[in-house]
Image (cartoon, rainbow, N blue to C red; front, side, top):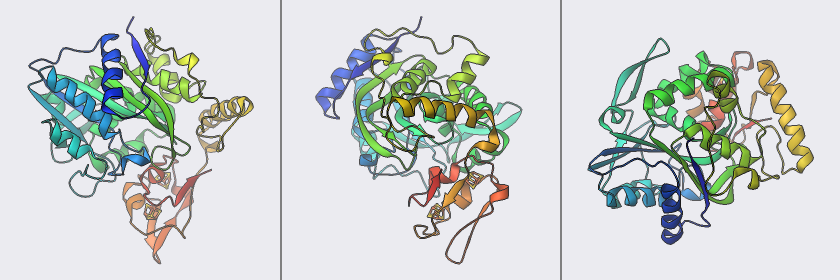
Length: 360
Ligand code: SF4
Ligand code: SF4
């Protein structure tokens, strides 16, 4: 059985990160990187300062790049392509660009460097670095996610599809379950060899772009991304999340692993602010939230629609550009929402940099 390593990592100091990383690698099936081209896919949802916990922390990424370089990788590529991207991928504010430069890696903008793959009857552009790499690593951030309850190492690889090419896919795969099944296909197409989750500082509340940073103090890694994501969801206090529920239906046992270090059942954060609960909870709210989420997922119609605070809206058009249902436009200096068209994909919420969109 694949091993899934969860270990304490109290902060982002080099000493703490290097020793946590080594414990994880020594206790799991980390691939041999000597002489290989390695692609690392962090979460660069937006070029936000790392304090906001929106991106994989650049110091954690730096620790991994350093390790790979020291182990003799011939080339290291780091890349992503967030849906908000309008120009060339920028990773400056997040510190990721510096981490890449310092460790002799190269940055790949998937929007400029991609090739068409055939998936689920669709011709989809995907990062060409996937073809070049011998080893593919996912490095996600420990975060809640409005549509999928939690985002992790499997969902992270959705970012190999460049920019706004992702939007129509939300229209095609509208429910969390159908989207989860599609994410599985993307993950498989990426041939991910190993996955990490940066859980030193995670995000709770309305993730993945508008939640609140929260200290978790963990670093996690496994060759089995499903096991890793299941462990993350368990630590957040979810009884289940759509990705794992769907994956287990399609391939029973896919998320099973052994835990040589810490076990997620001993790390559950009962007052974690989960999607659908809205406030710091007790054990009672954990149960109520889980039941609510179950019913929300069972019926597409009962899921809430976004609401827009026009006093915060800066008319930046990011939500308009990303909305797959064309339910949004800018008029009179703010966003205008055509409710009936909305398919509740929550892409707009993910993209808004001004906290003007709520899901309640
Ligand atoms: S709601 Fe947010 S993303 Fe949409 S136009 Fe306004 S500020 Fe931009
Ligand atoms: S308005 Fe927002 S939630 Fe509704 S379809 Fe558009 S992007 Fe998705």
